[in-house]
Image 1 (cartoon, rainbow, N blue to C red):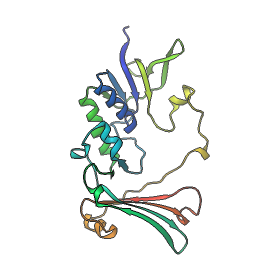
Image 2: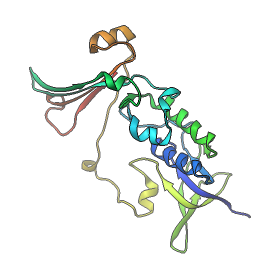
Image 3: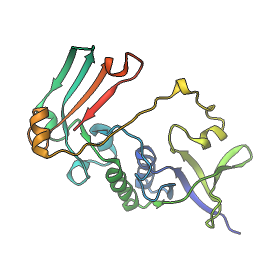
Image 4: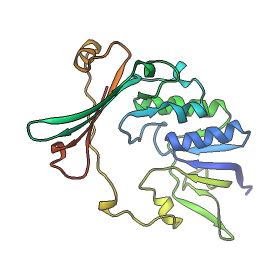
Length: 230
């Protein structure tokens, strides 16, 4: 049976994987992205901030068409005690226009758009496929196995971009199994408010956003922090 061969296989259709695939596809390489979720962004972990400079290096002027929430014009850091706080704030209207600094995004929307740019550049994005192992030949990785009808896929390069808990990276000996103290657990809640209420509470006008990061008593002084993004 003839091997299905690509220049590169990317495992994971998150921002890192798609950025790698898009860069290679733009250079004319034959690339396939394999995503275990039903679509890019179906399985995502992120606070919600996207930084403009590195993104624009891959997709110039992305803000003209990408699904974005608000450009962040103000960054606040708060250190809390039981009954008081001290804060540091940076705010500038310069971040309200191109080239911006950062945006809030909803990853389910952003990832699908980003993956579509990858496909426009010529890459293949395959959802609902799980890579179960790496294929080795003569001491090097030459592809992946999926355990599905499509069978094994081969490539000169395999990029593992399936997250911090990558079992593939462990199988390849790239890192050991993480200990609890080496990782962080995040609980995130999305709260929908009327646009005018957000503007009033965070002292911004339409299409302006605020990012807040909160330390101290909010985590009982343990290592960690809270965040609020509009």
